[in-house]
Image (tube, helix red, strand yellow):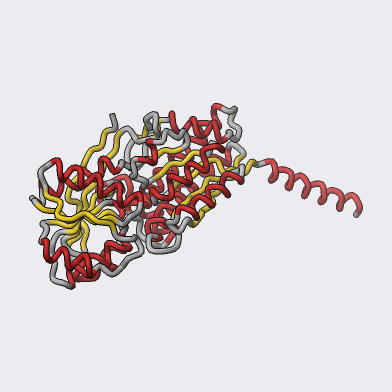
Length: 384
């Protein structure tokens, strides 16, 4: 009996030792999981989780337990920066997918830079995100200096505008996007009848609508997010203003139509760095897996989160290979991501330039008419 007990205890200890021998490897997301832009943040987080689920077996073969830690930044720079500091303190976290908002990405990436925690963003379009030259900051999406002009070109070429009213939400994202669109519009001889900012929290557009009624622009350009864009559209249409409302990828959410209402979800256009599902044939299997895993349909930012996570995960595996198939350091992962070539992604091959911008990608123009989305155009974006 004594020997049997000893044998069981020994086996238990060996099993425990084996479990402890596996190295814990984590990646993190920083996105809004609550608040008015949580729909987009959840898409990125869930797309990342799906990729993690698919890569776990590859990591296990190398003796690594892979997991995801999701942080809610509430679309707030201070909250996102606090999350970044917690990530820096957790040595098992090797890289980050995120953020959604440019205003969060800039301070969060700065906080992570000294610890060499690489970030791969699915959605940050502000030019300052990568123009600071941080070695840890990368993105797979196009920039505002491509997206703003694309929206302007659409307004001039397709909508034939001559006079435009420009609004931004006073955030780094909204101001940057609106500024780039306005610059391109002016260069093409379009008159900017008004350009103003409105706080991102504002939902009463009475004063702005009164000015729009008086100025009668051919289009309204809005640099901001769907949580504000939806009510703006609803109030415009309620006042009988059917002027086209044009914006950027911050409007790219199924919630936009719900917030705008049946009457408001019409004659809205936006550029987006996230591909519509019907434009990515290879995404059908991923979409089915996403629906099975999370009970919701994948949207463009789910695809972008998924691809960003695959860049991160493949970067870690590439770094591990150079490290004798052992868990790599953060510095090794940072280098592997920036210098890598990532193929077989849903959005195509990803390579980064010296600043962390994607060398070649696509952007899309989406039309929302009678609450139904359709693809109105595609733009190739090449970084030189």
